[in-house]
Length: 357
Length: 130
Image 1 (tube, each protein chain N blue to C red):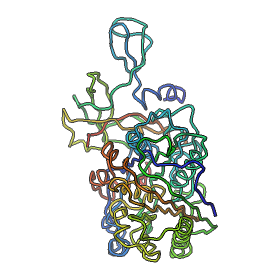
Image 2 (cartoon, rainbow over the protein chains, first blue to last red; image 1 turned 180 degrees about the horizontal axis):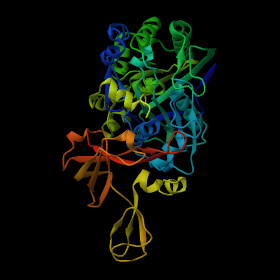
Image 3 (cartoon, one colour; image 1 turned 60 degrees about the horizontal axis):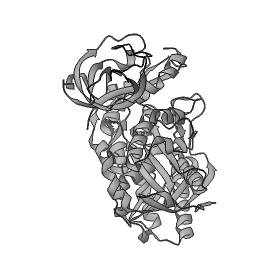
Image 4 (tube, helix red, strand yellow; image 1 turned 90 degrees about the horizontal axis):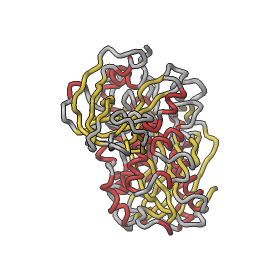
């Protein structure tokens, strides 16, 4: 077990998200493949998903989310000591997305940058690394990004949920932060070799082990990581105002919450999958971003990711006054969710490069 | 576009880094060694504003090679908040919804890809403010 309570206390200094404006409804995907949308809408609680435009990818999503985070943090990009991008839909197989983002926001050249990969957990991996670097005193600020333009093969059940978007979090030292957004109480990671979902080299779309993605993968890791963290910090579900779990659909996080003893009201404010689908590496941290958009000082927030392969990172934050004072300095998650244009399957196929010219 | 040229132009294409003539105040974008207005070589770095309004536009339905997948797309001339003007793509809007005078803001987007194995070129485009 990895237990993280850094030597130097760390805080979230800024946060920002970005969600593309295009949406495709589950009915439209089901229409093309002759399926009923009922299962996706009523059981998995997905109405529609966000689709990246023809000129968008993980780099462009990350840049807008990062600019929003920097604006809220009131930081010059030159103050960033690290820029990490977590994703499973990197624009290049070999060439870091992190350098594209760092250059575009003006953080280069004196900065550590890398891409992280752990399926849907890659975003919180970046967060753990930033916590480690800031918490050890090596850097003053680190930028952790989780973003994806998730792939789902045509007609595959994943096609109904694989969405696009992401979030950037700036981690800073608590003792140097004038207006912290949220203070980290602690975090843990829990990983095993569980092959529930994968994508081999040179394959466009992932494969998955159907129902195997549930019990031994999502639920085991999410629940184990959460229990470890609660034990480590001597906390109970009732101590939290909000809880955000990874959202491959709406059913899984609500079920995990119920097993752990969290109420629906603690989970629903950060449950975004009905409106934008599963953002993969951006999923849980975008839910966390939506919570920071509305939380009040003193609120305790649980953030638990899950990445296939498999593992979970769990964090406990206590929201500070900075969340309230900084939230209007950038577009909020709900602003992006409301800014939408529905498209049909033909335009979706063009945007997602399913049409080969 | 060649890789070296794309690399050289990243600051102006990705961050709107322009320059300003220290002699006459003329804003220069894309960057040049001398002021096109007064000929001075006294040039200072200058960051263009990221907001402006649309002065005029056209819809490209027969794109040049390399831009086929983007079509139809909108090319516009934008007047930025400091009065300087530039031509760029307008994104996140259907061609029929574009109006002269609409407020716009800068976003980084993909401009083109050099086939399946070449580099991906990014640059600032503008989208309707929201």
